[in-house]
Each structure stands twice: as structure tokens, then as C-alpha cells.
Length: 154
Image (cartoon, rainbow, N blue to C red; front, side, top):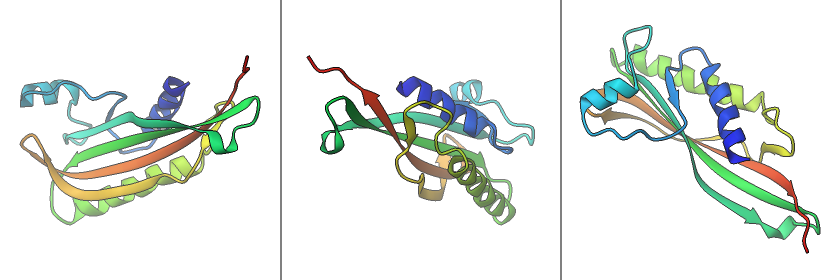
């Protein structure tokens, strides 16, 4: 089921205007050539890269019933967008992050059965960071997703 959740997160993220290339895995990047091959420049001729990964999950037995388990998946979305100027790039990136958060809050169930966001997504960090040789605005968003699974114990 986690792949279906990852796919829905991908759909939500790619549906936000201003988001560039989105991957659901971390590519192997050893050189700037690798970086540019995985993340081509966007329509504004800027580096604009996003990665969605599931980096944790657990089964919460405290609310489990005889036939239901609650699985909590933790996804991390990391995004980088190159800086053109110090002020406008910062403002545009902050607005983009807010738009992404709104998209998640408007799609709590993500259209999946037995699955819903357990908690609101959380912006863990917004900062300037280098990716390779490129100075970017960077964001890391944590998206916890609750999934209820029906189980048949023997």
C-alpha cells in the first residue's frame, strides 16, 4: 500500500504549479552531470528538484482491534529551487511551499481507501543550501500518513 500512497503524494506534488521534476526515490548522483541528467532545468531555466521518500513506518498496536491494524507511514518531501536573486527567489519559494501545504490539506484522504493523513504535514526546515554547485532554497516536509489495514488473525 505504501507505493500507492507514494504515487498519490507524487500526483499531489506534481499538480502544484511551480514544482519541477519530482522523483519517488533518491537517484545516484556522483557528479554535476548526474545531477543535471536526473533534474533538467525547469521552464524558468532554473534547477527545481523534488524527492519523495518513505523513510519510516510503524504498526500502532495501541488502537488495534481484532481485525484492524493502524500503520503510520512517514514520508519526507525534499525540494530545491535555485536562487536567482536573494529577495524574490525567497518570497517565491515561501509561496510555493505554502501552496504545496494547501494542496495536502485539501486532499486529506488522497483518494485512497482506508488511508488518511494521520497528522498535518509539517515543514521541518526552509533554508538556503547547496546541491552540488547550485545555491538553492531548500525545504523538507514531513508527511505522516495513517493507513488502516484489515487483518485476519489465525
